Amino acid sequence: MAIRPILIHPDPRLKKVCPPVEAVDDEVRRVADDMLETMYAAPGIGLAAPQVGVLRRIFVMDCNRSDAGKEPVICINPEIVATGAERVKTEEGCLSIPEVYDEVERFETLTLRFLDRDGAVVERPLTGQWSICAQHELDHLDGRLFIDYLGAVRRTMITIRMKKLKREKARG
Ligand code: NI
Image (tube, rainbow, N blue to C red; front, side, top):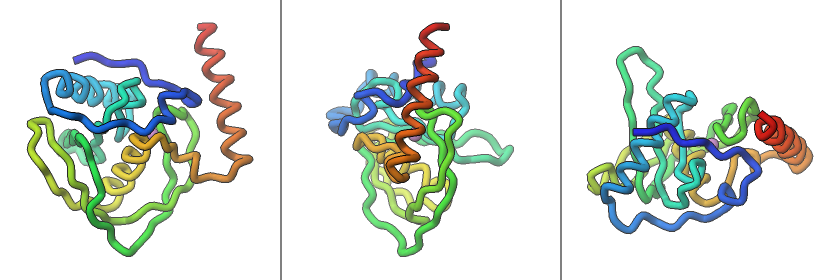
C-alpha cells in the first residue's frame, strides 16, 4: 500500500463525472487500498478516487470514531437506492479543500448499493455521519464538491484561498 498525493481544489480532475469500474481486479483493489491508507494518514473519514487523480467510481470511508477499531468500507460503483425523508444540516470539510468547513444539507438515512473489494454486490443502510459521508463522496464521483452547495461569493472566496495555498505549496 502507498499514500498517494491528494489533489487540492481547483483542479479539473475534481470536476469530472467518473465512469464506472468495469471489473473489480487487482488494480482496482490496489487503488482502493492506497486510498484507505491515504485517507487514514490525512486524516479523514472519506476519500474519493478522483481526489487521488483516478477517474473511476470508487470511494472509501470510515466514520467509526469509537475506540473499537477501524471500520474501513470500500465502495465501488456506488449508488443510492433509497433515501429517508429526513434531512440534516451538518458542517462538512474535504481533504481537497483543507481547513474549510461549512454547513450542507443531506439525507439523514439512505441505502447504498455498491461492489465491495471482492466485487460482491452489497446493499447497506447508512445513517448519520455514514450517510452524510457517503453522499459527500458520491458527489465527488460526479465532479461535485461540497462548496458547490454554498453561495457563489463564499465559493469564490474559498477558491481564491485554495489557489493561494497551492501557490505556497508549489514554492515549498
Ligand atoms: Ni471531499
